[in-house]
Image (tube, rainbow, N blue to C red):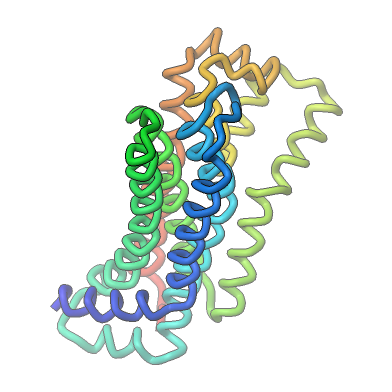
Length: 273
């Protein structure tokens, strides 16, 4: 029965506007950056394929979290409003199965365009005769998938605790704005006011999964992380480039697991109908 629910939700997700927007944006990004990267101009010390990948990931670090939040933040509330959730729960399946049916197809729909985009860029670069560094492919793929999982899980938690789709959407937009812009401004203000040591700045910035993605990209293409100033110097000297990369890639995955468990717990204990 769970398989039938997964298929039903999968068909619903494929018909959703956000999924069409995700696919269209992935194709547009790949096409745009393939065109502008045909000339060998250095970006962060890399040319060709490295330039394309860095550009795609930096832009995607803003778009993927927004799409992830939009896809899951209304999963439970919209299903409740449409009567779908009540129908699901009238079937001989557990609440946990209903949660998985609402959550997993949306996560799959977020991850697949990312894999297709990165894989398409790597294949196109290879066809054009440019060297493809598999390490960069793996790191950038892990970064974007981590963002999708983290913000998708956060959005699902928001959906489980919200009573209306509008409330859930507003909360999702607020979370995206806070992680994309507000946290950086607050952190900058704190740094200017109290002159925090680099370690504290690194830890505070690292709590934001979107900021982790940015640092991971820099650590992948520039192991010295000189563009981060004293914070980058501290990270390289104290942690090392490899450990810094592992932390910034791993934290969003840990956050995704925690938010998923919290969302599941809320779904199982609340009166979601």
